[in-house]
Image (cartoon, rainbow, N blue to C red):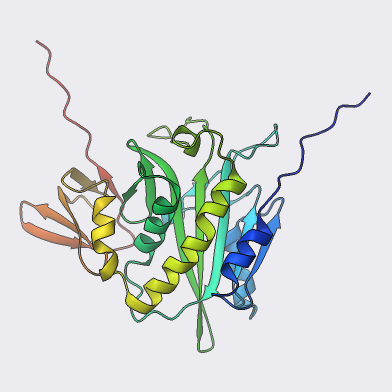
Length: 269
C-alpha cells in the first residue's frame, strides 16, 4: 500500500481577503507552491502594468532575495510543515515621504507576532540577538503611478545555520505550534493597516513604538562603511542615529549595513 504524501498546506486566504478588501478595494490573495521570488514576480507584473493590490505567498522560493543583494533561502518542507513564511504585498502607494517605510513594516510585523521580538535597523526582526525575519521593499514607477512591493520572510521553524554568522531564530521558540498559515493570518491585515497609516502620516508618529522594540539602542554598532559608535535610536524620518567620536551621525544610506559590535573578549586570569 503506497503511503500518502504530506497534506496540502491550508492557507487562510478567504479570512485574510475578508479582513483586508474593505480597506483595499480590488485586493486579492494568491498562493503559489513555488516561484523564484515573490518580490521578483510582483515587480514583473507591475512593470507589465498590473498594479492591483495583492498578497502573493510562496510555499517555496527558489531565488528569494534580501537586502543588499543577499539571498533568502526558504528551505525544504519534507514533512509538509513549512519551515518559513515568504510573501510579498504589492499595492499602489503615494506617501508624502517614503523614509522609514521599512521600519513601519517591521514594527507591524513584530507587534502582530510577539512582545519578545525586536527590530534591527533598518529592516530585520530579531529574537534574542538572532535574526528571525527580513524585509525587502522595492518600488516600480509606471506612468504617474508608483507601486510598492513589500516582501517579508519569517523563519517559522529552526533552520540550518551553516554558513551564517549568527544562527537564525525561529518563531516557534516564542509561539510553540505556530505554522506558516497561522503566522500569515496574524500579520497580513495589521501590515496593510500599518502601511496605510504610514502613507497618511509618515514615520514620525511611530517613533516611540519603534524605540520600544529597538534592538540597537544603547549598543555599540559597526557599519559596513567603517563607522563605529553607540546607537541612539532613530529620528522622525527613520534615520539611524549613531554617537561617534566625531559627534552624532545620521545613517540613511541603503548601502550601509549595521550590526551590533562583538562584545569584548574576557581576559585570561
